[in-house]
Image 1: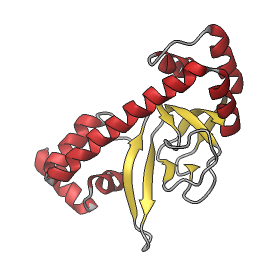
Image 2 (image 1 turned 45 degrees about the vertical axis):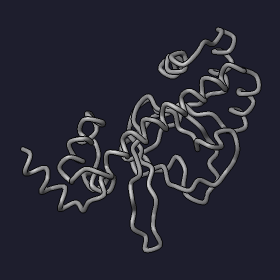
Image 3 (image 1 turned 60 degrees about the vertical axis):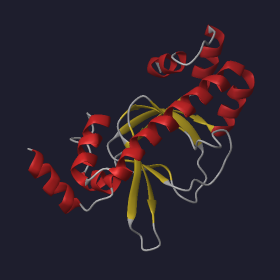
Length: 189
């Protein structure tokens, strides 16, 4: 829990009373590899913070092919960005690709916290802006780079991730077939 509080305090100030209130509404949630934090078309009931593990956000096309949009690792906030305090149906899946531990809040409790702690709204907005900017920065390079450069950029942006997740997800994120990724990896060794 201290990791989460320290994370919040990077973006603003909270009184001890506010911190105690936040702690009282939180729950620990462990996700086994392969389980979902939320699924497309189903109500998401939590917002939360990843303390350990890696999740991926992915979409499926009409043929059932999966496309990894981005990864979420330790010390990141989990919410459906545009409606973190409301019950909505996500348009993507958020799946644990390693065993994960999270600090979570029921959306109802989160909404009550946002009403009770005005500074928390400001903090969360700053977090959302930072995460969206980082996500755009990471994705924008994928448009203009060749396969080798995309993989090297991935290694730079996610330095501790490549050995922790299946290469099929990395290839999907980079917009290439797994065989192409294998060739790229072989050529840069």
